[in-house]
Amino acid sequence: MARLRCLLVAFVVFAAALRLPGDAIASRGHHGPAAHDYRDALAKSILFFEGQRSGKLPPSQRVSWRRDSGLSDGSAAKVDLVGGYHDAGDNVKFGFPMAFSMTMLAWSVVEFGGLMKSELPHARDAVRWGADYLLKATAHPDTIYVQVGDATKDHACWERPEDMDTPRTVYKVDARTPGSDVAAETAAALAAASLVFRKSDPAYASRLVARAKRVFEFADKHRGAYSTGLAADVCPYYCSYSGYQDELLWGAAWLHRATRSATYLSYIQSNGAVLGADESDNTFGWDNKHAGARVLIAKSFLVQRQGALREYKSHADGFICSMVPGTATDQTQYTRGGLLFRLSDSNMQYVTSSAFLMLTYAKYLAFAKTTVRCGGVAVTPHRLRAVARRQVDYLLGSNPMGMSYMVGYGGRYPRRIHHRASSLPSVAAHPGRIGCSQGFTALYAGGANPNVLVGAVVGGPDMQDRFPDERNDHEHSEPATYINAPLVGALAYLAHSYGQL
Image (spheres, rainbow, N blue to C red):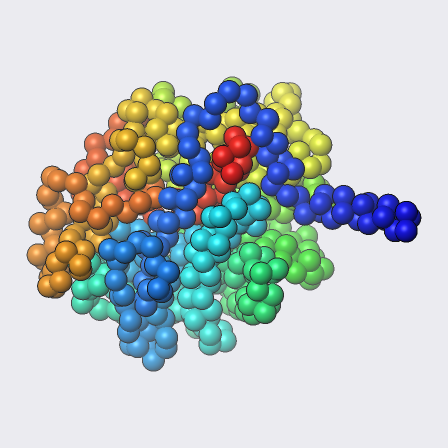
């Protein structure tokens, strides 16, 4: 019995190491009080996704001012495309950013879900809502339905999702009109989501990963950018500017993680170089996935000790070193107030995605008991976490304007966000239909939005740390699912590390 107990203890310790639980890296070792209530921000960042839902809303819906919408989506093509998410402040369902949002939300849960406690069921619900839609969008072999709604006509109106009467045109990619980028991203989302449900709903997880395999095979076999054949419909909104190679590497990385199959390991080894694994780009978002793929694959070397992927540690190190201020390798621009600044249009998406990658890589480095060498300087996991925390703190209000860029968090936050459903009276307050042109009165009005879209993170301030809070300023005032998705994981880590969870 004593030997059995010793073996059992050894097994538990070994299993804990393999699991890489969040509390192993979130040691509650921060000194001093937390700058923010990260737990409150976490809850609100997840709640935001309920405000973005399309379709038949469930009884558990907590954003009560929203109602059912898009109940005939897909009917134009005789398919069921009801459900999913609106990407931002309009009423189109763009498949490319939706899939990326689900990949990142799932990754947040995979890495830090063990720290979320009471928020974990809500996070899973948010992933499932998106994954269910992606299953519908990929129901037909060698076809992916990648968009619902004529974006040009939708943007010519300002109306509630519940009222929309613009064409719900359905767009697809197939063997004749390929879209490796959107297809591989969809495969990544399905594979990542399968990991979220592997223990809680193994049958659903198996369905997701099986579909991910099929979709990735299609993406790889029929190569091409979806914005080539669908340029008039998806551009300039979500063109695939970076090409499709990054998504193929990203999709293979997620399938390798979800299946542990040698097939995907071999694919990464054989195709990594041609798919841009060693490119020096350091922007990670809905279009370019190279940095995320490098970090994800580097885990296989750092944690699973797969020596064949050693080079990805160097690739990931290169990205991380470009982000750390004060090193000789720093290539990132920061505002005077300390915010990472990539682009003026929806810059906060790069802030949240970069913070997430730094915290996740810090987790892998800590497990491997190693550091990153940046121009002769050893950058520790602790330093990476500090850089990431500074970005999250800025977002939550530690900035020159003293403004939280998350709606509903803190005493001062954006009141006039660029968002149709939030800016127009709810159906409960105004049961009558609000027409296409009639809604523009609300767009240009000066008052606060009548419906508070709690948890929405807007595009953020300009390079001078200024934020005008104007509804018609979509670059700075529009929220998006791909801004929030990686933030969920970062907030879970910070809330736990400060003892708030």
